[in-house]
Length: 180
Image (cartoon, rainbow, N blue to C red):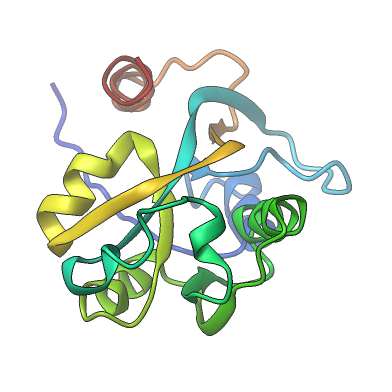
């Protein structure tokens, strides 16, 4: 019933946890739980998980659809920066799959990564759970998904049991709509 002011910030997990600790933030949505070396009074609330799909501009997607994922050998890739959990998982997946990607760019910002993919800069990964939105927003096509690779998502709050009505709505919506 009270008006809500939503402020969205992006940052590394340590600085976001520092903001949670001093109550500058009420909620962090993250692809990793609170690191064990951080002594912050906050709690992980699992939102769900998604497989990871690969996307590319429609003009180049046809080159990689046959014999997927082996067709990705030496393909041009746009990847998240090496400090992200997704990138570390992708590097492991590439190695297990015997795929050597040609990494042409790395990004801290996932929106910028997708924009470069839309422009035809290379193949890029994104959560399968939002594939429909990615195809629509960026006019790209889905090549396939990285079998066995999952990305997990967490709502991190200073409360063990979420009581704030807005945060409760956000977490319930994510669980119900994204991760069904």
